[in-house]
Length: 316
Length: 260
Image (cartoon, rainbow over the protein chains, first blue to last red):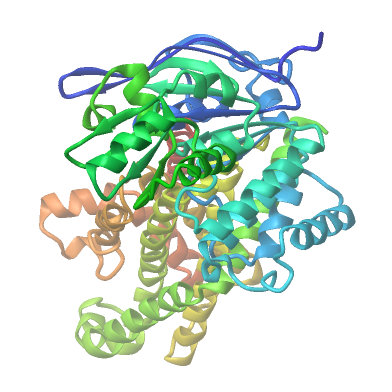
């Protein structure tokens, strides 16, 4: 078996604070197989960015060992730097330079021959839909364009391991979807992607494996499906016009929790279209009129509520 | 490629980055050229008549003062530019692009070298403009070609030294605003030396400071090279100061930059 792209054991990091040291990472272990997408999911302040900063050689860990692309982070940081690419939460483009100049700067810093650098830059501008904006300073770009340029710059050096720190935070839904497609296309070329996000949906859409980080500790790790099984939160809420209909519906469905006060019936389920249709058809066959339907799918709040047993406020 | 070759290549890439940025954002360069020119005109036309007479010896008056004041204004131009460099470096450090550079396999100090060379090029342009205006208003040096070369060489060394110091100060500053204050004391040094009046007209304590601070031997050496006044040991002192400031500031800047 080949070596995983990233292995981290016992990562610790704390910063001195007013009331003693603030522990940011408290013994984190990670294994990311080569050629997969790994998502580190957690709320603000969980330690996601600190993890990326350590793995990408920006800051040293207080304790722990890391191997990336076959190199020891502490002993051969330059070898690690040669194998990785990082696109951070805050756009890492030179705003005074144009899109093409930013890409050519990266090509020069990767010591590509002039001609090859130009070819690479042009190909990336094409691939990331930035050809028209190539001659404009990056300061005039929209958030989505800047993020695309940022990722394009990361790709100039053909990195084998790519870190994406909250790649879609602050983007509109359309730009978010574009970015997702770009990430999927990337992993199809064999690179390994380590991404952090606060959106469960994003991890669900993209990642082969997801780890949940909370207060500097990993509280769960697995595939999206494995994690969802840990979360009971999904249900459909049906509203009825009167207590008779509610009672009838409860008998027909045979499960769920009825609330006579609110005239609602909560039916557990994943909220999928098939399950929902079956439910409504069954009620329709018995001529029970449904006044309203609401679908509740599990989200990050549910994950944290369930796995940490904390209230929403404390989890944030 | 060997490590020094890589460092040179990365540094020249960063110099190109910096020069492009300066072209894209010319208001800073223009300000750096205009400010010393305005100061030169103020000193020569407003104060020069009186100050020139006080110089004693020779013809005196405004025409003598133009010759006297040019080296001081040149150094003032460099320290004014240093303020701009410190702000530019501090601003740059707040940008995500620096984090990107740090995660790349490139020579660590190359981005700083880019700032220094870019800024020194900017300052040499400013000095050329300053010399032009000075000639137009009566600056009459008697330097030979070799003396001119030596003067430009010393000015370049001084610019490199002060710019590395400005880079270090910019890196140490938490915000661009505080970076603009850090080099302020340097602006006083041409005044608290032989830049605008001879030091022997000053009170004893001030005179002692003025004679021994780094700017005075540099200005005296420039004066000697351009106008033929006595240099004595000023040249050695000037070169020593420039080398020492460069070395210490370079180490300080590099340490601050590479510290995570």
